[in-house]
Length: 376
Image (cartoon, rainbow, N blue to C red; front, side, top):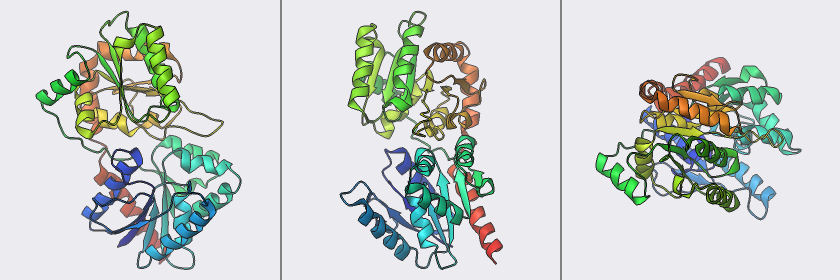
């Protein structure tokens, strides 16, 4: 079996890049020959990568047509073409499958699998691509429902959760040094969010919840670790902290490596991902892989209802689901977790063990084989 995988990123510090590399690596471990098309070139991989041009370039239509041509050429000799997102990757995959017996698959992972279905021009192309796909692997039940609501045929959609990338286990010395580096107390109640710092991730709302919890936990500290996508949003967080006497209760950490992230997970009391779903623009959280990463360290989580996070948290067992943009509810749920933290922690460890890349990739390969049999 030879598979062409199409991705936007391969950088391990991005969610999509980490997911793409994990899928590719575990396909290769399963004996699948892999060729990759990517908008991001990397020299630290052991497989061929065909470069694609981002559609944010000066001439997007020219880039789009050029990418279609490159993907089709790269697919020569491949029996399967697998796009790791909807727009525009699934369209490239569908073009590669025209006029031949190649099987086309796509993943539905979030905003860019759904939002383009409501944009003129993009909608026609992406709907055509989804119709040509043998199967669309949705990373959560929420993503599947959003695609059904958008008119995608339900029979093409199956839920296959992402695996959890296993992070290095830090030593107690590494954890202590990390806390010292960011002026964090070893006894503080640390509430952690990992991911891009922007309004959709809800860091400001979580900070507002921490303000409510400060009365009971004076040394509580909210740590937001991730790239700053919007400088104005970070400024709003800092301004809020200054206005509400929370400067000592907030840390914003950018460009953290995996070792630092692992140390923060290990030191945290609760993980928080209180994302916001923008129904007007169809931007939403597709799953919340960082919730499962936190569970590796026995860190329970609180996170939003009404998005893919519902598949990442067992409500009342590994943490709690919260109302979106409701600081009081978030504070109440974090408080309840802190009161029974040991029980939630043990449940989180067991929950994490269910999410493996071996299981995810095995589901993909089984679908490839089933489609091949049906084609015969």
